[in-house]
Image (tube, one colour):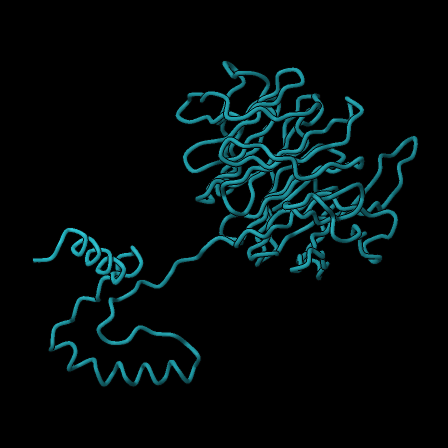
Length: 359
């Protein structure tokens, strides 16, 4: 009979032979023989064809797989933003600008042109940026006249913004806000006009657009933070302290979050999975709340710094919020913050003026 010491030693040897503490993958359930007999030659032929075409297919005996549905573009570490009149790329990991800002293309109007709004594109590293060109300078009797175009922008792996060709679409006025729909087929925009601002939706394939006037009742326009619901059925924006929703199919507008009973002045809002994330201003303090089912949550985070909200949007990963504070009233540089899981991180500050950002 072995001693206790020998049994302990044998137990340790057996444990060492088990390998890593990770369960092996479950074997695929075998298919009925009838199906194997019928599908085996066909499976071999398909496999040969797939190798020739460069595809990867599951062999006979493996579980059937459903073709993957469309996925959101992968998030990159770079943030695209308008700074003063140019377009800059910021590395979210370091807060640094790896390359000089990109000025508007010469054919867009030279010194009379400026970037105004950016939004994510349909793929990773793809964006859309609006450039507004001054067509007629203001006089004592006439206001300025501008026109806008939308350009495709690609951010390379080293953080360089490359300006591509513009869309075959030009529109009077200044495009101040833009948001691409979840399916990548429609572009919501806010256009500043002499006769008043307008909210529109452009079909990128046909270049047809519909617009609806933004009623300000003599009050300076405060419409901002355009965003789409995840189902693409509604455009969400804020105006005069309320969160509104527009159905592009019918043109009907409704109130999503009223100003009454809000924990402060409603400034901006973006949709989340089952509600809204709302930026609320109380004096110099900006806090984020969730609004779901007509109820306000407890404050999620308090954004440090000073000044109002200059921009508010959601990053491509679906989890990170970007919020900029316009600290001009406090004689401080403007700051851009990333908010995720209750944590706030400053990723950029600048003495310039920027009003649009996309990640």
